[in-house]
Every structure is written in C-alpha cells, then in structure tokens.
Image (cartoon, rainbow, N blue to C red; front, side, top):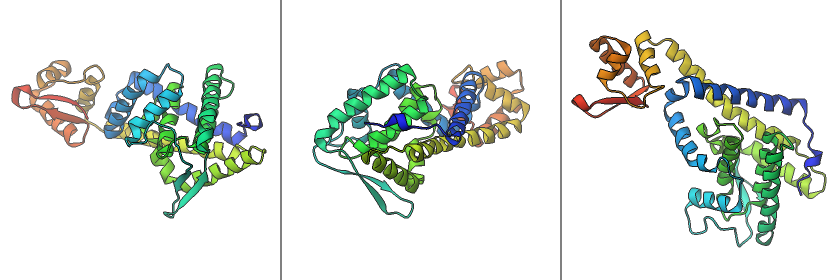
Length: 299
C-alpha cells in the first residue's frame, strides 16, 4: 500500500530531520526554564490555545472517530465529519494563483484505505519502526491522496500533522500553523505530491521528493519560531534591568498588581509605573481593570 520499504534516508533528509530535532530540544528547554515563549504575543496565545485543544488527545492513538470529529470541528458545514459520497479531487493553490488538481480515492475505497492507514500509523509510531518525522510525512501524503472528505482535506491534513508532531514531542508545532506554510509553497507541495502519487500508482514508489518537501515545510515552521525567539531575546537583552526583572515575575504568576510588583522587585513605585507603561507600549504586557483593581498579565 505504502511502499515504505523503498524509503532511503539520504544525507540531505538526515540533516533536515536532525535540524528539526535540534530545535525540538531547544524549545522544550525554553518552555521549562524561561519566559522566552511567554513574550511571543499572538504566537504564544495561538500555541497555548491549540495545545489546550490537543492535550486530551496526546496519549490516545489516532482513530477514525477522532479524525472525523476534528474535521467537524475545523470545517463546520453540513458534510463535515462524514466521509465523502461522491468522487473529488484535491485542489492545491499554486503560486501563480492557479490550482493543481490531484485525483483521490473513490468513495467506496475511502473507509478500507483509511482503516489500513491508521493501523499502520499507530503501529509505526508505537514500535518506532522509523523516525516519527518520516512516519508523519508518509501519513500526510497518503491521507491527502485518499482525501476522505468532500472538502477541507488539506486543512485537516495540516491539523493532523501538527497533532502528530505534538504527540511525538514536537511541542512547538502548534505555535505556527502549518497550513500557512503549505499555502506559501503551493507549487512545491503540488509537484512533490503528484510525483509521489504517480510513483505509487506505477508500482515504483519514490518517497524522496515528498520527504524533502515535508521536512522543508517543518524546517520553515521551526525556523519561523527560532527567528522570533532570537528577535525577542535580543529585545529583552536591551531592556532596562527592572523591566527584565518584572517580566521574569510572570514565570510564576499569571497576573500581578502594582503592589505585588513593588514588593517582589523592591523597586520605586514611580519607576515601576514607568517601566510597566513601556512594557505595555512594546506589547509585552497588558493592563486590565481600573484604579486599585488594576492588574497586569503577559500579552
């Protein structure tokens, strides 16, 4: 079905996977020990919300029911959550604004193919028969070639990829939506999926181009966060000492009032008031309430 026995881990693929795994370790350390993630504004908020959605699924095997429920949650139309009943094509917008179309599985083949794919996925991840990034890449390609739903297949495929990454320790994945990166590289995605599909159909599976494409997308996802972190860290290094000290307080506190900040920093009220306003203006902190009820939180 998958031709995975033909997969060859080239030096290029190995380098890509190692770079992604290196960032995985960096991010895990940041989540544990620093406020770096807490000052990423909208990125942090999106990631935290996404993680809250995914945490209940983290220890569960992926199932048809979960996929259908996630599709229903994501798409929200009359056909959401149910397999397609008419034939369709996978539409991928290319960089020139035109659409590339890929043939997909017939409605009657969807259920058996999805069952086989999910069984293989869970078994591969459980027994670590190959690197999880390779397993997730293969799953994503085959899922898109099946395209089990009437619409929204690319969107749910990206969502499932992030879920699988999250489940396998790539906890940074929810912080940058993968579908935005896929849309940015529509030509690359279309050409490599088409090549992969044609190679499977001819009985001569070639996964090399798709694996390169998928890992390149994940490299850009990690690179986006790496750049944002470096920028924020540089900004924080230039902050006044008291401002940095105030931000550090939010490692242990979700919200703080002025009197608490004064007590914890041993600073002057007038200076703290000035630094708080600067942090609000620079979108590190947000002010809530009024007068004596005023409190602060990270953006």
